[in-house]
Image (cartoon, rainbow, N blue to C red; front, top):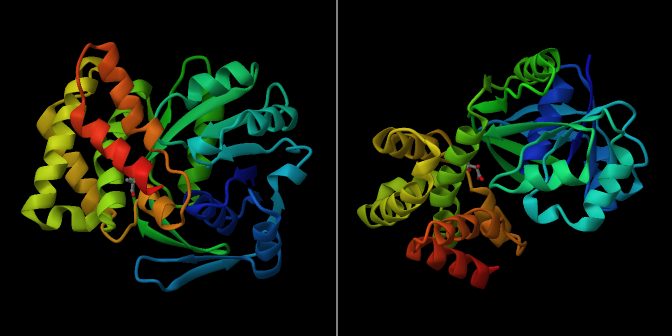
Length: 305
Ligand code: PAF
């Protein structure tokens, strides 16, 4: 039985916590608000399948993050958005996670690893990239809208046994996991997927699967994809046609899913667009290239949020 804490009560955090607890781990959940923690402590956490049928309801020990004073040797799975990584949040994290502590990072986009590495010296930071689809139904219920794949960075500086034990824990919880030496590539591939699916679904207010259901939408996807691929390709992403197929596969595997950006705009929350399409624009500028599609979707999502 692993001692684990999931930090973040959004869709991915609830999905991780419910499956880790259901598979027998000592899993606690740290939320942004006290009200969500209290609801989880009272009602437990419900997991639904794609069809909206209840798969499990587990009891959950939850605490608002601001009330957490120690991680009690737990591995911490960081399932908050990049937008949550404020200075105050990181300061609190550094008080809670002891030097030698372990944090698994599940953020979309890029930049978070470098930020946290600087702020949390001595901690083991394991980078994970996931394409699991999840939809938060309410503060105590989540729907697993699409099975994806979770890649964990196989970093030479991190003890292999530790990586294997995180992999095993997630696999026993029912996730498909692989260790990847191509950490940077995995992150950039995910960035490409998010750069295409997330802003378009958020602007058009449609589910992932609906993106591929009309020629007009496919043309938009294609334009955004080609521009983004052209900027990211120099980092050795792989074949363009293979990646285009991957984007289409993710749309199909998570077809019932509302992307995290759509969920954010619907909930009037700040989105991760600055860390996804905004980051692509900044990379393009460094390469002396223009990125009109990424600029446009960043501006549109910024205007919506
Ligand atoms: O951000 C998201 O919503 C997810 O990363 C993905 C894979 C696009 C599925 O919705």
